[in-house]
Image 1: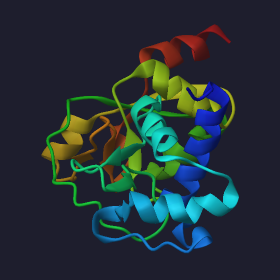
Image 2: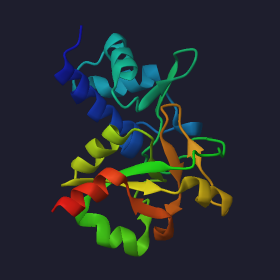
Image 3: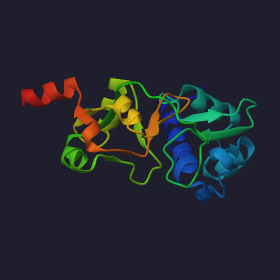
Image 4: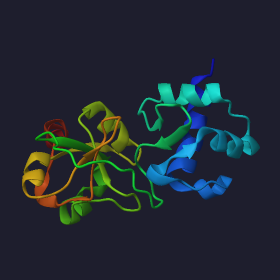
Length: 191
């Protein structure tokens, strides 16, 4: 049994290694962002023991399902959020009419001027779970949720991809496809 605190610690370490700095533990991401579980466990051994059981628990129980193991259990990867060059191999998909993006209120002026930009990541991340988007936005300040007119964007030729954990990805969301969602508008009006 692994404590919640230990799960968070291991998840953060996995995110760092599998999304941003595989080289920090002597790894190189393979095709699709995959590395072998054995190589990862060996690489992580110097920073504290992570057993296969702990790794599998973190992959299975991570609240955002950030990681996935191959069907045979021999490889692992982060599903999205990479800042290192990697082609995850996701196929274009038709999004729902509307998607959500969580951010902090202090970024709204820039977002409504430039749209949603991917920054150092490969894609802009969106989803359908409002509570999750509030949580994401709250990491950077007072949270707000933006509604993305994904159906309109797609009809206008923008490509979308969806990960195994339901995160929707696109290169850029121009400002003309963005509005504050109803709850965020209500909160703004109440101030």
